[in-house]
Length: 113
Length: 111
Image (cartoon, rainbow over all chains, first blue to last red; front, side, top):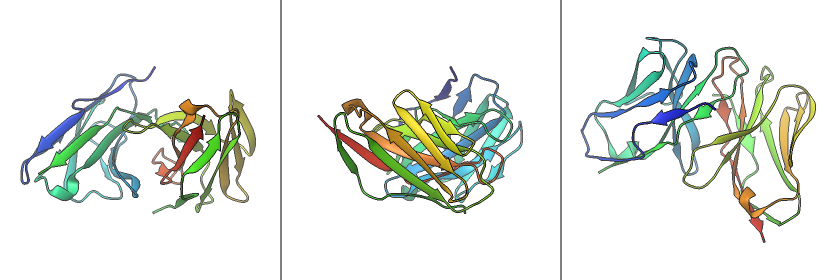
């Protein structure tokens, strides 16, 4: 089975802090994704990556950056956390190609106070 | 942004009945379609994928795809309380695994 591991299940940070969310997958998947999920808004794509050192903006990249230095690891960075970034963050991975489903990690619930 | 629409409002079904969920999508180039189940406080898990027009059955789940009408549906037969969850429809309009998700349908199975 695919395993996508997010480093923290719950995280509480203060406004203005730099926040790192880590995600590791163990199936040699080419593609990795970061979503946030909010009530009434559904899943929204922040950033994604098809290869090491490669990144592309999703639908809501403002206030975020990402890093993919190794194939198995995809990090989401909140440069200066704000209260409107309080959310559930979900990492996902998939095989290369065009028809592969996404496999999600357990999620990180981030609260910014 | 590609649009994926799911019926609004929770769906309540008695135990043992069929739950029917519908999803429409705006982009004709989509070639792969997925249904995810998400329990409260948990992450989405894949339950069905479908790529060709017609029906695909997996246990108590049946996915139905009609590309001409741009809809995909999910039937849950013999609904169980453990099926109570939110079901997310996802399509692949960009052709590169960048999925577009609907906002989900909550299903409540009443014992």
